[in-house]
Length: 214
Image 1 (cartoon, one colour):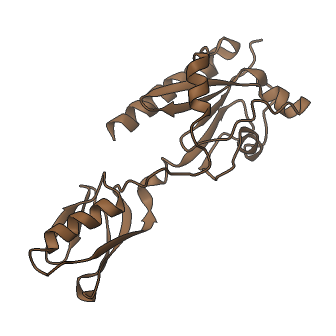
Image 2: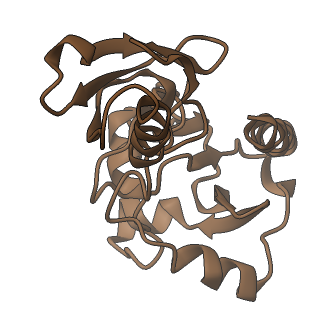
């Protein structure tokens, strides 16, 4: 989680600078970094689901219904499973958790077969969102949907307001440990139909629309 907090800290700083300085917004990242960020897959919302606190999982043990249970991931990152007690879940995939439970159950039953299904994805409520801030009619945060683009989220926000420096908009995207700043010519998209920078969005993206300097 510390990397996630660092990411949002960097994003908050960059957006604050962008909104306070108008056209003197932070400079774009290098062409190489931008190209790398734009080639990241945007067709799915999550590459591999990692469990976290507030998720709820269904643990099913084949031929042992009395050991099967639906249970939340606690704030300490663990789930409570019959016979084996507390098992670390946070930071693992559902398949990884199932393997750990199988290993611990093997002390009690022969060749256990466990499956774990996520029934509520509470921990990804904010991770899998996209956001638009700054000079739009209604800044917002909304769940990511496959196929969503810059224009989609701007329209959801009611469009740019009268003070917007539309062609100085910036899309911030995390790639590994880096935050990449990608220029977006929002004015060209909205008024000229030039969609070259109408990029597909990825979970975690933030679009910042600065105000003009008067």
